[in-house]
Amino acid sequence: MNKIKFYFILSMLTLALFSCSKDKDEELTPPREYSVQYATDIKDIEEYLNTYYIEEVTANFDIKITKIPAGGTQVSVMKQTTYPIKFREVDLHGIKYKLYYLILNEGKGESPTNVDNYFVGYKGDYLQQVTTDGVTKLTATEFQRFDFYLLSGAITGFSEMMPKLKTGTYSSNADGTVSYKDFGAGVVFIPSGLAYFSSGSGTIPAYAPITFNIKLYEIQRSDLDREINGTFSPDGIPSYLEDIDGDGYLYDFRSEILYPNKPVNPDDTDGDGIPDFLDVDDDGDGYTTKLERSYKDANGKTLYYDFADIPLCTGGNGKKRHLDPKCQN
Image 1: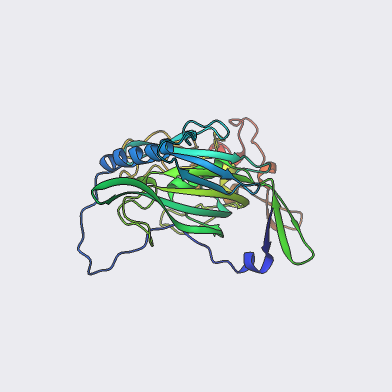
Image 2: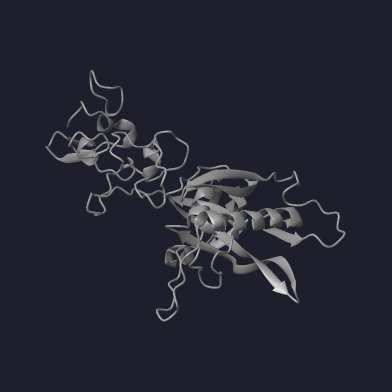
């Protein structure tokens, strides 16, 4: 159970897991090819999973992962079955990244999407091959002690993990703290191409795979719609409700650098290349989604339907009117 002061939650600065900029005077080295670096990263991650073991998981889902000693009989992270290793394929940079993860506790509440904001606790380690006296060994170095954050704009590998977890429950205590229980918790093992890649961050070296022990406490739902010029223009429908295929993952495939092999986006109603969670006109009929959510009350005041109450059109395509190009406000 976790106890966290209300004033601490309210005064937290939003932490974005973005790369730190390098000194302007530093000589620039061209970044490595993503595919070349991924081959190194996945080798290191799988070596780690096969040569380290889970020493302890506490009742609060803190995990201790330790190197198997020479001659040791401990079962590796990869082969143990208490928390079976799983992986998710992430298509980015023209590569199918393998994102390994463990579920320590699924949680009992709601799952976020990969584009929501999260109130989480986490600790982090980076992996690195270190040579000492001519001997090279894979090491895991802590770069972040366990702490609490409201995360917005997390690195790709972190956000790809979040839909696998659920929130729990919380209660207020007489001393002003909040207690959380039954929250989702897990561990994710992230190749550098889904993390900080060539830039590193803080004490994290460039091209270092990283691991996070994550606990999901609460979700802050996003509404990310933007005008063509980039102006933020939320339509009042949270992004998770614009996840048409309901898989918990929302993507913008317009970048040819990130997505050189652009797939069809299942979350783009009008097929204009802008997914609904970013599109101010989801059905492409020339009327904004926000306008199609609106109606006038008896006094002529403009009000907005909740998502569940947005009506369908007679003779339409069977979808809510903001998703039906034949249904115009």
